[in-house]
Length: 197
Image: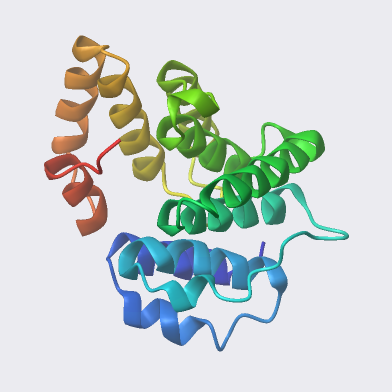
């Protein structure tokens, strides 16, 4: 991944949507473009970010398939009742392709964990499996050599999954450790006002 990935991560963590929008002009690869859109949408919920996303990739990497899966999951979350199943299936198929290529790739773990956490129970919601994916992700990114994903991000996602799985003791201990850090604004907000799952 290009050096742009870390710039995108920093803008995302600081909730700087304008910076992310300006980076779209600098994205000179498909993976950078997908990453920027993946990070920009949750900050803005601007449906224009999801316009014209590809339905598939002919030669994508695990990271690209995972990011595209995440974008389709966002789209499913905003879709009408008629489209939600179609978009959800598309997201799941893209994620499966990403996992075939590299099930342990950081963005595959991130998107899969989010998918397991937010999908409906009928579609296979599994908060304990999500917690395991985020734990694995946190171990991989701990040393900071994964451009585009911060260790704190993996940990706040892990905290949410543990909380949702009813593992309150582990969740409370992790939250306490995170609160002792100087977290970027997005991750602090995540702890103070977590997304509805």
